[in-house]
Image 1: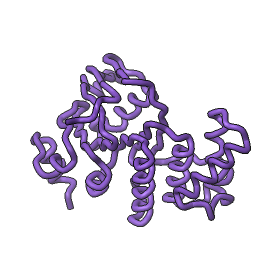
Image 2 (image 1 turned 180 degrees about the horizontal axis):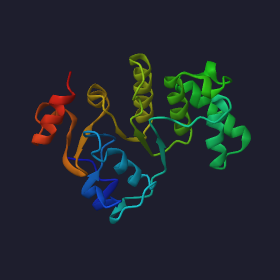
Image 3 (image 1 turned 90 degrees about the vertical axis):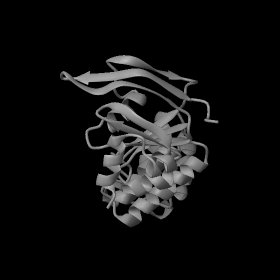
Image 4 (image 1 turned 135 degrees about the horizontal axis):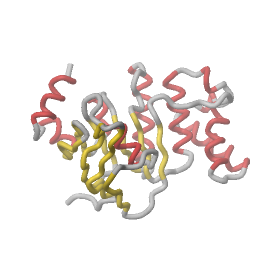
Length: 230
C-alpha cells in the first residue's frame, strides 16, 4: 500500500517564450525519498522550482495535504563572503532565531555534516564538495519537512559525492522528505524509494526504484537507461 500523498500535482504546465517546458503534469508524491530522472532539457529542474514556488505555473495547481516547511539546495550553492559558520547562521537569523540560538544550531549542523573543523574558514575558499555540505547544513539547520535538491553532487569528485550522499541519507533519516534530481544513476539507485521519469516536460513513469531500473515501462525510459549506463 502506497504512502498517503503529501502533494498532489494536477495538470501543471509552464510555457515560456512560446515553449511548453512542463506539459500537463499530474502526479502524487507520498514517498520519503523521490528522485526525478530524465534527459537534459526534460524539465526536471523546472518541476522542482515550481514545487518550491520559485516559478509560477501557466496553468494547473499544486495541492498540499498540509503546508510543509521547505528548503532547497542548488547545484552551485551561493556562499556569502564570510565563514562557513556565518553562512549557516545567516539562514537561521532570517527565520527569526536569536543570535545565540542561531549559532548553536549552526554549529550543530556543521557537526552533522562533518565540517565542524572548518567552521571559521571563509566559505568561498572551501572545495566544491565542502561548499555543498555547508549548503546542506544551512538547509538542515532549519529542520525542513521537505528538502528539495537540484543536482546536489554534479561536478563533484567521487569522494565528495559520497559525503554529500551520506549527508542526504542522514537528513532523510531525521524525518525530512527528500525530492531531488540527479544525472548519477548509481546515486539514484542508492538514495531513491521511487523514481519519477520525465521526458519532454511530461511524466513518463512513476515507479519504485527497483522496478524502474529492472523493468522500465516506457521506451523513453529504456533508451535513457541504455544511454546513461556506462
